[in-house]
Each structure stands twice: as structure tokens, then as C-alpha cells.
Length: 332
Image 1 (cartoon, one colour):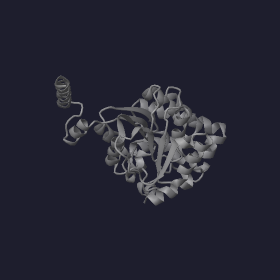
Image 2 (image 1 turned 90 degrees about the vertical axis):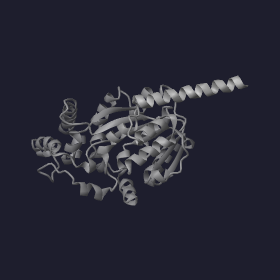
Image 3 (image 1 turned 180 degrees about the vertical axis):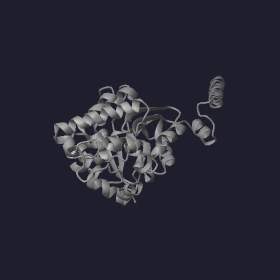
């Protein structure tokens, strides 16, 4: 299964036609995300909001691909050293070459293979990243526990631009209906010339192309909220744009004024439908802080990890620790 995934992404990492189909790859989509991040690129947004000028000494990226965000974080000094993990050697080799050309090849270590098979000591990293990659990984909860284990006590897990929409792109009919009605009103020059109606993939078609594509993406948000009491989400929308992009004339979107104007209008509708609650956000930045052992035990027992019982237990633990330390000092 992972061999097919590696082959798929190795083939498409540098394909212009493939990348033009991605709604977030369009310059206007990139500009909107820049604005949503406080007029910063995502690496600067994260560094400003969470690192506060203190670079992560060592970070990992799981499912790194071409590692463009990771390389940018090295460039701005947000990370001192990156370990990059991916099943495809194509993207990893590109990242390694890019880092070398920029003069910090010695600050990148590359690993090819499944994330869960990596032998990483507990508490190795200040930051564990999934750049639009967590929705490819199963089992989801085990992957997140793995990431939590390998970060330090004050570490972060950052799921950047993560897809949290319906599994295998199996959009609810109510969501798809909005995009279908809109698509039907578009001029033929801006629609895919092969389709009169909006073509949406079936879950079976999605899995046949990449078996790891979004098998449990809809569970990412609830699972992370349950596992990580200290979690923040920044919506990036996409509930409308992602669906309607399937049927567009992607070359026209890049090469004609009418196409660019259509993208601008789609993004406005996308945000309006999201802000009004008509459609959920399909994409988000998710940042979680390390879950402590006490919180993990509470979660396993079905106890609120931020509830009164856990808080009282932690206060008692701190009191006993202080008393023990005081007794040791007196005994000296």
C-alpha cells in the first residue's frame, strides 16, 4: 500500500497539471492564506505565535514530502535542525538537495520509510510537524500518541494546513449540492471541457489512486481535541472551494483574467459560507502542546484531563514533591 502511495506522490510532486488542480496552489489562494495568518507565511506565523523568538533546537516533520515549509523554517531561524520523514524518496531527495543549495545541508537529516517504524527516543524533539500529511496516516490515534511521545515536555505538535474534511472526499450531499448548483451556472470556458456536471470522485476512486488518502480525516479534529487538552485551531476554510475545483478548467484559472476573477469569487463564497456556518472548514492549522502522563492516564480512564480531579491530583503531586525536597534539604 505504501509503495503505491510513494509512487503516486513521486510522480506528481513536480507535475504542473496536477498542482494546478489543487485549490490551495493558486496564487490567490496562497494570498488568502497569507492574510489569514496575519499577513505572514505559515512558517513565520507559527514562529511568531508559538516560538516567540526561541528557535526549536530540533524538529521532526512526518510526511515531509518536498519539505518546503520546513526548509523555510530553517531559513528564518525558527528551527536549528530538521529530521525529515517520508515514504517517498523523491520528495526527500529534493528537500535534501534544496537544503544543501541554501547552505544548510548539515542541518537536515532525511529518513525514508513509514513514520511508525522510525525508532525515535522519547522526548527527542521540540516540535513535531505534519504538513498536510496527518490525514494520510493510520492508525490516527497511534500516530498522534507516537508524535506526543517523541516531543519534549514543552514541545508542540503542529498539523499545518491539515485536511479535516470528509473521509476519502465523500462530501455530504448538502455540501456537494451547493457546489453543483454553482458549477452548473459557470460558462463552458471555465469548466472542464469533459464535464457538463460537476465531477466528484467516489471514495473507491480516491483510495485506488492513493490508499492513504484521507481514510479517517473527519476524525482528526475530535481525536485531537480528546487527546490534547491544550489545542488551538485556526480555520483555513475550503468547504466550498475544494469541492468546486474538481470540475474547473484549471489552465484557464491561471492563464486568463476571467479565470483569475472566478477564483477570487470562489474564495469569497468559500469564506462567506464558512463564516455563516453553512459549510464547515475543511482545512486548518492545528497546534497541540505536549500531553502529560497524568493527562494521558485520565484520557485512558475516560476522565476529563482538565477537570477538577486531575487538577487536584496534580496539586497533591506538587505538594508531595515540595515536601520531599524540603525534607531532603533538612536532612543534609
